[in-house]
Every structure is written in structure tokens, then in C-alpha cells.
Length: 329
Image (cartoon, rainbow, N blue to C red; front, side, top):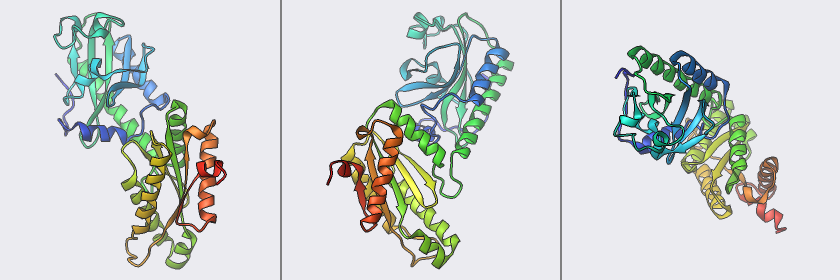
């Protein structure tokens, strides 16, 4: 097999999953850059199906797919789950004759896959997070040149994922940009699952800039962002919403869990220290809202924001819940 000559980490599933999670790309809408690549694969390799697949904990999710209506499959039946186990392309000439796949439901039933060529999508630190694959419904022998072409396209996919992350990453704090964070909030809201939303504002931040200078203010923001990331669960999303206002999205968290994490975050920020200014400390005010109490995504965000301003008006360095306000207490 001809494939990718690069650093490759094998046997570290936890690290691989973390590398995928850091991209914040799962369950995002279709994007032209990835659609263009899969269309090119179908044209250049002459296949009816091409896909950018990302291998999540229990599923194979399609960032882009041509020729199939599916958006995901169980991981256990995914050809691409085999592809990510090595650094080179995986080639299957006739899946019905291959012991690894001949009983696969995607082979014995619709869509009746026969030929498969997959190139792993490998992060710069060596984790295969998914694959770019080409599929045919009849047996065929992909050529070494076609393997090289697909591997090159897989590199393009990784480049696009990095560019996407760069565009959605705040340059100072390393957190998600406001746009990326709000998109993540919208995605979680549309899924309908329980989730918590925290919005926090650094207390008296203007005084830090005025007394210590803007470089010190930047360092304070970075220290606060580091505190947010320490508290943030694996499935959470942290973002900078503007100025000294940060956000933390907690998929799957109910009110009690969200409030506990908010209090942990308040304490973590209070303990943060600013590089080059050992005597400088600061606090934060935090507003909390859970998805279940709100019928509109904008209303969910507005409720967390209102809870934040309540925390600021009631003395700062505290956590306030939108649910408590709704209850009239």
C-alpha cells in the first residue's frame, strides 16, 4: 500500500478522540471546501461515492459525502474505522471476498459496497481522526497512482480542518471565537439535549488595564481562559464572546451540574495569576442558564446574559442562575 509517510500515533484512542474533539467540527453543517474535495474525488477516481468521515466514539460521521444520503453510520460497521488504524491507504478490491468485510451489513445489504479506498486524515501531532474514502459498487483494483491522489486529497482535508479551526479560534486566548461559540450553542440547542450555558465577565477589568496597562490585561485574559479550559469538561466548548466576556457550553449538563461547574470556575479564576504581575489577581461574575427552560436559542443565550448582569449587580464574584430568576426568587 502506498500512503502517508509521517509521524503516526497508534494505540492511543483517548488521545485520538481528544484530537478530534479539539477541532469542534462534529455535527457542523456542510461547508464548500469539503464538498469540493469529495466532488473532486468522485470525478478523479471515477467512483459513485466519496466522503470525508470522522470517527467519533461510537459512530462514523460524514463531514461531506457524495452519492449517499446518510449523515453517519455506527462505527462498528465503518470501513474507515479500519483505515485509521494505520498511516497508509487502505485498499479493498472486493469486500465480498475480504474476511474483514464480507459479513458487513453495508456489503451484504444496501448500499452493497464492493470496492473501497481510504486515506487516513492525520493531524499534525499524528492522530488519525477519520478518513477520506472512495467507494464503488463493483469490484475494482485501485492503482498506486490513485492511492497517491487520495492521500494528497486527505492532506487537503486536514489543511482545511486546520484553517477552519484557526478561523474559529481567538488569537489571544486560544478559545473559540464568538461566531464559533454561538454556532456551537445553536448546534447543541437544535439537538434538543439538556445542556448548560455559562457566560462570565472579568470583574473590574478596565481597572486592570488602567492601572497595569493593556499587556497586563491581555495576560489576565489568557490566565482566565486557561482557568476556563481547566474546568471545561471534555465535551464542553469554551469561547471568547468579546472583550473580557467568556462563555462555556456544557452539553449534557443539567442545572445542578452547570451551577457546580460555574462555582468551580469562579474559584479557579480567583486563584489565577497573571504572568509578569505576581501581585495581580481578579475575580469573575457568572450567569448560568440551562437549555430546557428556553424555547429559542437566542432566548437561552439572553437568559444566561441576564443572569450574568444580575451577578454583577449583586456584588460581583458570584454565580447567578437564570432558573432562579424565572422562579421569582
